[in-house]
Structure formats: structure tokens, C-alpha cells
Image 1: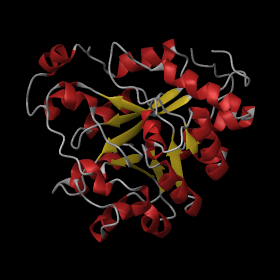
Image 2 (image 1 turned 45 degrees about the vertical axis):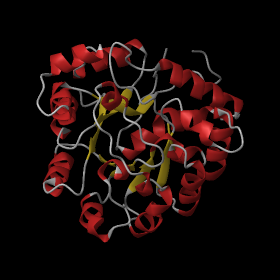
Image 3 (image 1 turned 60 degrees about the vertical axis):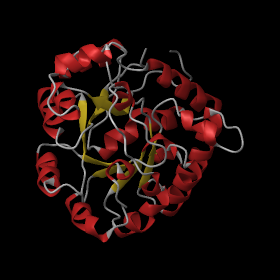
Image 4 (image 1 turned 90 degrees about the vertical axis):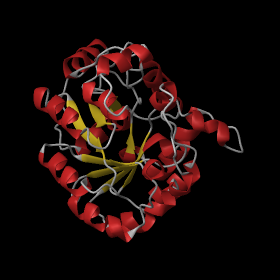
Length: 302
């Protein structure tokens, strides 16, 4: 898509990686092919994701291991294509093996620990999480806040006993202040708790907002909001240096969700974001968080 900014390196901060182990873990042992057939989805390994990124001219993507215990799948993908993927892993810090898994994932090169407090029913403000903040020092921690709905669980008829009492971004305030060396990422602009996410980001310079998905949470807002409105407010608080473009892509045959990119790029254009600002939001900020050198001559996604 033609934009005001010319050619830039686009890096997607939010892609769920569903390898064979994901389906088996999710269903308690069913064969991956059987589960995919029920869903109408296709197999998607690291090579297929690289081909998909190439098809859309996307420089790299953050792959999320989307279940506690599935971090090896993303570690293997990164080992196969280290220049194309950034590694993220879901962790349930209440699980007895959580610390061992976190340390192993970081040693394997995954730089972002993903926490889903509503899913696993705990508060991020709990002092019991202090060892995990120590383990994540100098790295990134993604904390899902706001509304949480996992589409694949619904499709398979699996229970989702989530608890939104643990979804408020403001629970992160003291944690972020006490851990300035950690970059905290709040996805989906707070997923319905946009005001609270903005307050947190305003008070804590180590908090970043991930722009991913269609942001359907806007329907919960008292005053009607457009995506442009959301970006304008986020830019006013975070500037161009603390927003991370993402799509929330996940399964095939859908693949990389280019429509999300187009809608967000158009909103950024309407906001009057400069070429330098767009380069940061659409990829440069993510590269910096993951220690990746940006490269010249990148192409715009299609």
C-alpha cells in the first residue's frame, strides 16, 4: 500500500505461533492434524511464516508461544530464522515449573515474557512475582490487560474461566516503577482499558503500547472512538517512541492480516505522523527492544 513515508522496514510486534505442539497442549493430547481439521486451519511452521512475511514484504515478526509450556516451538523457529523472528513466550507464573521455563526461554533467545493475569487468575502486583521481574531484568514483559477472548478455545468448545478482576493496567504501576530496566508492553492499547493504559504509560516511561488487532474494544467506550482517535491519544501520551505496530495474526490460511496494517497506516497518516515517526512505530521501536539493527532499503508491506 502506498503511504506518505516511502519504503520502511515493517516489523510486526504481535503474531501468535501455532505449531503442532500448541494444538496438542491446548487439547490435552489430541493430534495436531486432528485439531486443525476440526478448525479448518492449516499447518504453519517457521518456513511457512517466513514465506508469508516475504509475500507481504515484512522484515520480521514477534512470534508468541501462546501456551505455557510451548516456548520451545518459538525457540526452534528463531534458531532456524534468527533474522526474521523475535521470540515471545506465554508464562503462567503460578505454575510450579514457571521459573525454570522462564530462565530456559531467555537462555534460548526469547526476549519477551508474556503474562495473561486474567487467564491464569493472579494479580501482577502480587509480591510473589518479584523473582520473575528479576529474571526479566533488561528484557521485555508483555502483560495482557482488558478484555480477553481466545477465539481458538471458543471454536473448540474449551472452557475459558478467565477473571477480568486481574485485567487493569494500573496494577502494573508500582511494578513498572520498581523495575525501570524492564520494558513493559501492554497489547491492544489496553483492550478496552485504554484510559488506564494511557495513565500507566504517562506515569511510567518504560511502558509501551502494542497497537495489534482490529481493536474491536472501541465499542466499549462511552464516547465513540475511531482508530485515528486512538492513535492521536496514544501519540499524545507515548510519542512515536513507545508504540509498537502489531497485527495479532495467528493461523493459516488467513496468514498475515494485511488489512490491520492498512487500517493502522491510514490512521497514522491522518494523524500527520512523519516518516521518521512511522519508521519507529511500524518497526524501529520493536527492533530496538529486541536489540536488532535496522537495515536500509527495506520495502513497504503489501
